[in-house]
Length: 243
Ligand SMILES: O=C(O)[C@H](O)[C@@H](O)[C@H](O)[C@H](O)COP(=O)(O)O
Image (cartoon, rainbow, N blue to C red; front, top):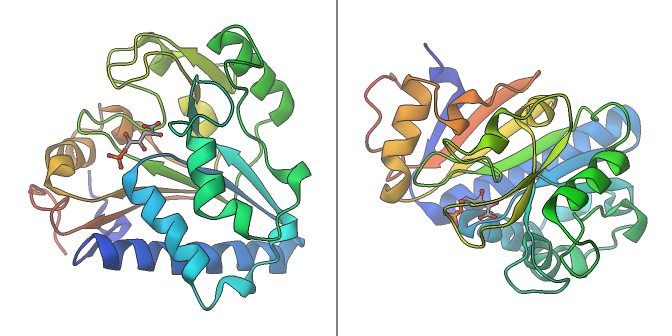
C-alpha cells in the first residue's frame, strides 16, 4: 500500500505541533470561506495538548471565526466533569476557554456524573450528532504505542462496532478503563483525518499501521483525505515509504 504522499515528517515535537496548528487554522478558515462555519473533532494526548497551546499562541489564530466552529471529541475518558484527565478539560484549559467560542457549539461527551454508564454517554453523543454523522471538516487523532486511535484499542470489541456513531468502551488497556469513542465508521465520515504522532515510542505502531493497515490506526480512511503528521522519531521505523 503506498501512502507516501499522506505522510509528512517534521524535525521534532515542537515543529510538528506548530505546523499542525498552522495547518489546522487554515483548514478551518477555508471551511468557513466555503460554508460560513467549520467543524473539528478534537483528541486527547500529549502532542494534541501541544497543538492546542500553539493554536492559542499563533499570530494567525484570528483567521478563524471561533464563534462559528463546532467542536466535537473523538473520544473521552469516562470520568466526572472537570476531571483533569478528561480530554474535554484538557482542550478547554489549553485553548477553548481562551477563545471566543460559542458554548452551544462545544459538544463534549457526557461525564460520569451526568450519565450512569459509558454506553449511555455514547447513546447521548450519537443523538447529538444526529441521524447522519456530520462530514467533519477536520478530525484529529493521536495514536497509542499499541496502534489505538480515539478509544478504539486493538482486540477490544468497540473497534468493530458499526451502524452507530459512538460506542461505550470498557476494559481499555490505557487508563481509565471506561471510555466513550466515536466508532471507526464515524471517524471515517470526516472530510479530513489527521493522525499526529511524536516520539520513538510511536515508531513501531506508525510503521505497522501504514504498512499493514490492520491496527486501528491503519483502518482510518477518511472520505476526503487521511494525513499522517509525525516527527522524525515517530517516523524512525518506517521501512515502506519513500520520501
Ligand atoms: O484519551 C486518550 O488517551 C486519547 O484520546 C488517545 O487516543 C491518545 O490520543 C493517544 O493515546 C495518544 O496519546 P499521547 O499523545 O499522550 O501518547
